Length: 76
Image 1 (cartoon, rainbow, N blue to C red):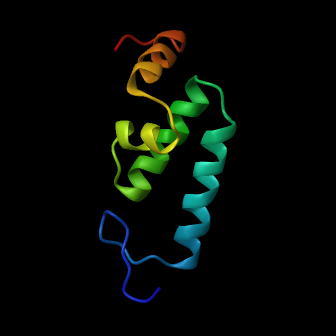
Image 2: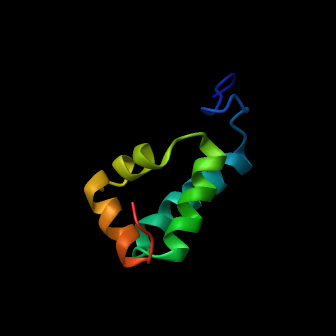
């Protein structure tokens, strides 16, 4: 839609929407770990959402995120 912007104020062009949707789809298919965290960080930078908001968008509670971090070798 004309005039719409992402959370970071950037115009929503087709390339942006395709990339955003691809990152969401990739996150849904990944198990917790390094690839998941890297993809989450990339999506966060693209859309301007923090980690907790993205996890909520995936239907993952923050508690589940802490467990995923522990399995990935990080401590909350």
